[in-house]
Length: 129
Image: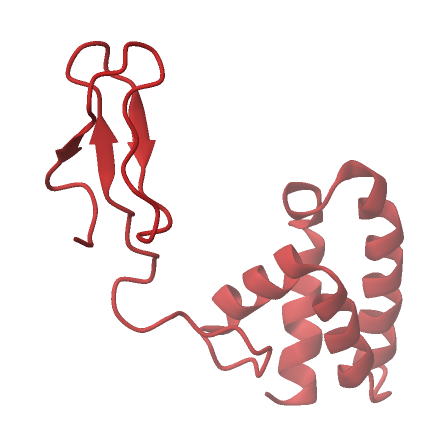
């Protein structure tokens, strides 16, 4: 990503800081980014410093990658495939609706802790045995 593009990206992020950061961090980060944007527009090389600020704040890094369309070099790439982790198998109690997720497939499926009835796998929600 070019220096000027990184400066413009940081400038766009300034308006979104209240939605991206905890309230206690907004003023400090806004001051830091504003100063870097101003210096960058004056021709000073600030890209490395801007990227450091973005890397310190994961929400900023993610939003910057979204705005840059993946061309930012920020190390944020969507995972291949679905883009989300598969759901673990889900088991439910047929009596009272208690649900249990089979997170570790080496663990046996327990009985319902409320009434001792064996849990039944609910199909369609998860993957696995």
